[in-house]
Length: 175
Image 1 (tube, rainbow, N blue to C red):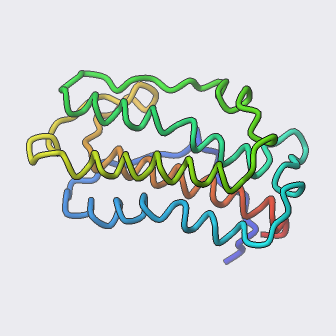
Image 2 (image 1 turned 30 degrees about the vertical axis):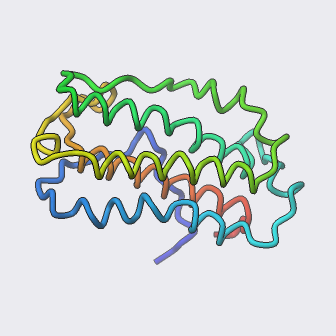
Image 3 (image 1 turned 120 degrees about the vertical axis):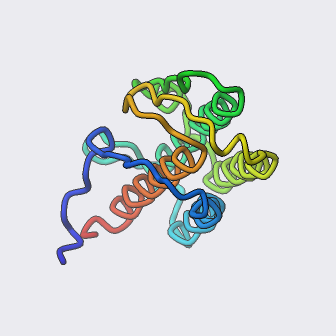
């Protein structure tokens, strides 16, 4: 298999519904490992390298900042599901918060720490859900498909992985 295959663009991805809530513990474990996996990629990388974007694309710090700016959306969508809203709140598809975040001016250790804190809080909120919270559905605004908590968590984990691959490709361009 050619690992240099072009990565599928995020907005071309599909997310079939997950019909087994028993998959949620493994997905939550994946969500919790985000910063650990991120830090393993960043070992011994200079702040300058992590701040440099290529060909108009985000730098590593901007990729991390993007993940951080989306944590409130994930919290909000979890609240939407728990409260029984018909639709999940919409994302800002222009990524304004990422572009305006000045993440290249920040230390990567602080970005990772902030992301770790936000993600830990999200996971903590998952453990506060009850069985009926896990069965509720809300329509995803862009995908136009119903999602439950397990689907939302899988969507987030896939989004994390998408950006971890982008970071890896910045650090090792032949990957």
